[in-house]
Amino acid sequence: MTVIERSLPYSYSHLEKAAELTLEKEPFTYVQSGAGAEVTLRANEEAFERWAIVPRVLKDVSSRNLSANLLGTHLPSSFMLAPIGNQGILHDEGELASAKAAAAFGVPFIASTVSTFSLEEIAAANGDGSRWFQLYWSSDFEVTASMVQRAETAGYSAIVVTVDMPVVGHRERDLNYQYFPLALGKGAANFLQDPVFQSRLSKSPVEERDVALAELLSVFFEPALTWDKVQELRKITSLPILIKGILHADDAKIAVDLAFDGIVVSNHGGRQLDGCFSSLDALPAIADTVKGRIPVLFDSGIRRGADAVKALSLGADAVLLGRPYVYGLAAGGENGVKHVIEQFIKDFDSAIALTGLTKASDANRSILRKVN
Ligand code: FNR
Image (cartoon, rainbow, N blue to C red; front, side):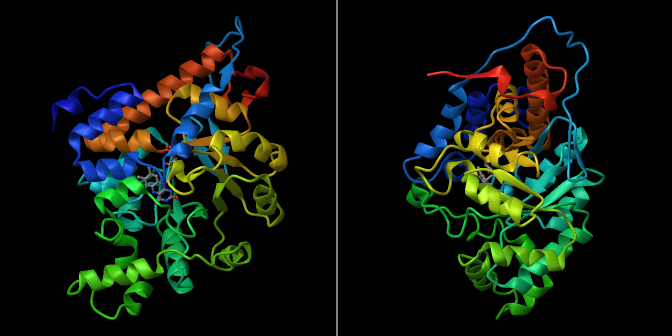
């Protein structure tokens, strides 16, 4: 397709640059930017620099196992692709390309509520791959219930409820461009193809798309969401339920006490509350609180294999890869995502071996030191 596709870069900063060269400035900024002054966005990456791996040597690392098994899902390299909405702004094939690339490596894909393609279309592209569904809780519970049931029918094997978005973060750079992909209809498929949502519309979405999108924006998230309400999901699905967007150990404790099936330590890639804790800084206390009773996943700042080693060492059972793979999508479509996944696996494998480990699940705090 492009020169970039034939020579996709290997480093994160060059990959980001390749995406920037491919995209218009608005969609590129939508992915790259964070909320406010982007203090948390930067802190997410900087936090990794404050931990150093102290490797062991002469350990016979000739055979290595990078895998994890979480809630019935096999992760061949202890990572999944994070839910990222509106991928059609980055490439015409959007989530279909990402879901296909993930399946080619057996890497589980987490589809966002606000995907450009519907969850059924993504499931078809993902084929025999494994997939989870990320839920933004709609203020219309019947819509939420309908989407969860559709996800179950379409072969998604867990529901990830994102709870760090009771309101949308103040993303200054998107505001500067007045660029909002959801309002443009780039993340509307799951709603517009939902029978319950359709039945609520005052006008046909085909004839009055703008009206449908405005009505979507009024229901797509729920500022009044509470722990009690999320528990209602139990009544409508038997799938495992994870809570994404945990930073406080007390919230992790509530998730365990209420018997949720897992949590994702995340600050949404610095896109929600600017000035909040970096995700990696939040991880150790949360892992200490959870004590292995439910899986702890981690995201926000994972760029390289050594980052994953550090997160696993600090108590994560697996990590989610976010911005890197969608930069690959922008720069090279499905092949771009495959390239990013392949390089991440190689880098992670090398980092595990060079740390002196043979199993990713053996990573623990004894191999880390806090520096500066
Ligand atoms: C996101 N993220 C996100 N999370 C979610 O639960 N539902 C979603 O629809 C989205 N959409 C989304 C769009 C874009 C452009 C980005 C960058 C992120 C957050 C995502 O799942 C993950 O938490 C972050 O991407 C992690 O940060 P890094 O590692 O990508 O910087």
